[in-house]
Image (cartoon, rainbow, N blue to C red; front, side, top):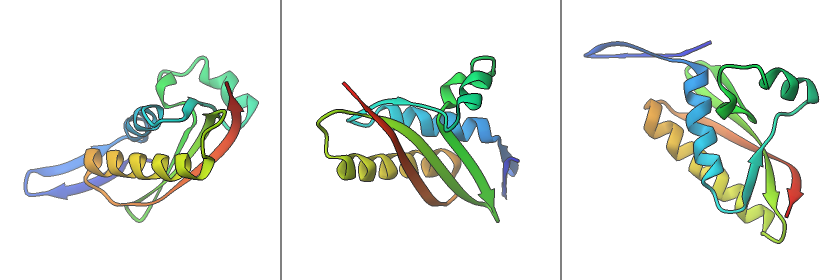
Length: 116
């Protein structure tokens, strides 16, 4: 499903993959984030052959033109997990709202693991 909006210039359609790529770039730039991973092993296996490996670890749901984003991240050992999660939520929300011009209703961060 894609995000659709229209303005005086016409109809704009943004794919889920584009939104997920922007969210993944924002998430990887956050301090304390080591990697983004898929939720299940089968998703990792399918992701090896996908066209967009940059969007790994990001799930996008669109309901009534509101974006719900889920991030699965591995964090660096020794960081304050709650502070990194809050920073990650804010960075992803800001980047996606700036890119798409649409409202992000919720960003949910799942900490999958801790790595050195």
